[in-house]
Length: 424
Image (cartoon, rainbow, N blue to C red):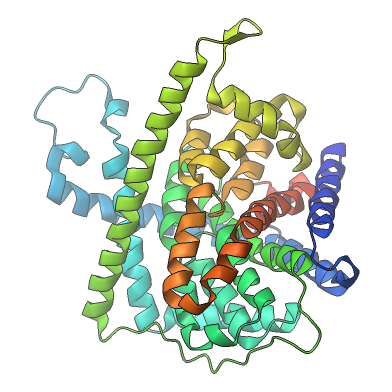
């Protein structure tokens, strides 16, 4: 049955689309057909994953696969780091929970998944899955072959790796298509980080792996729609045709594993550095703000973000009682990266947040749209298409907003569906 919370999510969906329309470069060119199609594709993908008969068995399989990857990764991690990574302890253990170390429990997963993704791409398994999604986006959302392929690649690869798939066509893309590629890259996450997020949320969210996987896939149509609203395609332009012969290639299976591991190592190092620096900066800011007392409590970054983003969280369908906590998570995602936000979401005890709010935040946080990704986007695309660097710089902040709103739109779609769809 529908409730007021479902209507609240629908209202949020309308507000998000209206905001993007207000910032459009051509308000008269609103893509009505695409808007309806994007919403239907998103809702259809969610329902196909959670509501069709037998879907729970598929979700159980996804969750078991993630658990299997986690256990396999632990074997490799323990072999290198021994008792530091949960191996046999040389001393009596008083608190088993204290053995959890983020650097040894979560980050190694990124290395393994990155290498596995490269291997699956070399074996053409992941490539054909990507082509399938590209064909779906091309047929249902009217994208050109090159843009459709880039969007599909974003679902599984990183926001810089996916343009490499269509590197031969980058100079043929229109301004609207480049913007669309940037937005979808910021609205989705890489396959290597999906598993890490699912591992973090597994103890507190049922079907965590399924939700994280669907979140990245379903946010792609949202990114397409919002990008097309903000920078519409001009009539007669765009639609570059791709022969789907990817520029992303490996010489052999061993080459794929080695290069995939190397790419994963760069991701791990970047994540580690960002976490250390940003957590330290927040702690430093809290020390400075602690001298100001508001409503009887010291002012903190968390409280400020919670207040600023509470209305935004409410628009996704979150109950007002959870809005400040959820708003804080959205603020953390935008300013400190989604990795920090997922870690904080995983720390929230079950009694302090409803399951609905936790599920909606999983979708709202699942995207690369954060301030740090702006630099990554500009740097990566400047290398791939140096002649269009100024064009990228002129659109990147607008792309950040559209990417952030795209994940919120996905949360609104999920929030507008009956709760029975997600019942275990």
